[in-house]
Image (cartoon, rainbow, N blue to C red; front, side, top):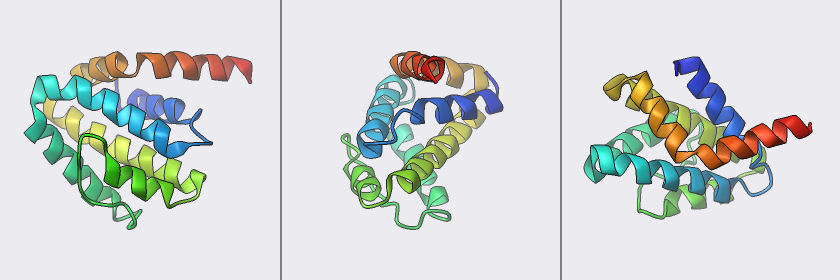
Length: 132
């Protein structure tokens, strides 16, 4: 997987979550965290997430900084916005996070982790695009 394909993957898996963006976003983060924490540990995951939030706040200043295993600050931030803006913010946050991750562990391993974490969402996104 390369950077462009990873960014397209993020756009594709966020596309079906237009109604309830926060729930879809949190599901993606929980699944990704589940895969990553076993590889890089909680401290490293938390550091990457915190750095990603800070970088995303330059575009979406309303994003809450903070992390718990339920991603409550992110949910509160996204719930407080219009669906389109919440979706854009989460997509940017995922792009930033995965860009940083890929710079540390490489594109191939990052891609494998994302495919493993989001295989259900990828299938749903593919079905959605076929129905259009």
